[in-house]
Length: 374
Image 1 (cartoon, helix red, strand yellow):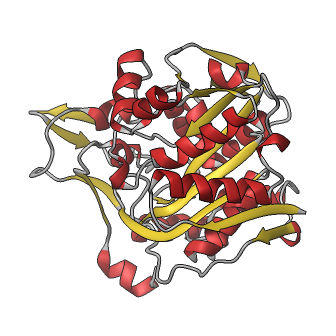
Image 2: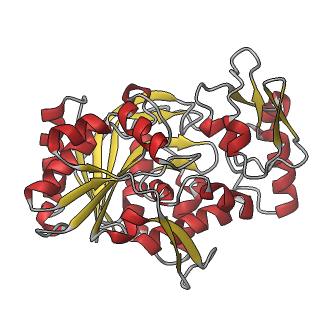
């Protein structure tokens, strides 16, 4: 069975979180099941960009702290590592770790914060969407990879959880290449399944205490759920996360691809713990119209219904992060404001995701949205 542990956790108080994570991992057999003495352990949180923990865009440091403590207790040598969206260099990593609360953890516990910005291109011939990946070095050098994700909605992939968190193993701006090569959502999510199969994380923990709903993964709103989830199987973990948030599993192409490929079997998912699903969890404003099977009609419907990124001139500070993050390179800065060539926009929404002040808005045709009720 694909066991998924579920443990209540009402708030981010260090010792209470540690107790909850200890209980959660205990349901899965204890940390000694996953980490041996002397193992190089990489704890990989979701640090998508430099955001404060209270924003609910990143994995809360108290959860990362608890996972590090448990790994160290059984003799693991722990490194915290992440590659955020945008440039990947030491200065950005230092600021990222500081703002997201990782520096304080490292100083308290004596764990290492990765500053090695090297990466390697590795083949993955078993891949369905791609046959190789660029992966940051600490992941490749680890004996154990523990993914510590955040439960959030996502305007491109609908939900981001344990599997999507591994996209942070791809170095910085190289992520844009995958978006540009695979603008189709289902194909892109199939690549994420390939990536998960390539990395094969040893253990996945999910911070679902304060989640993000709406237009995540960075511009949504915090939403309390009050749970920590964990599993040796990241797909099973994402299945249960969908249930906790009451999200439409058919809209999660990562899971649909895993089901089609025989990697995931829903009947095998076993929940170890109880939960009450969150009511009226807000979906992202961009949702794939999976119930329309004709590809021509589906594309037309999505063009009419789904929003497009529009910069808010009153909020924009002219930093140019949207232009630098655009995989299709269709954004140009003119007079310190982004100008988008919508005829070439692939609607990956990287500009929306990586805007540091939420100035890139998503706007849709409201009339068609009301008519089609999506």
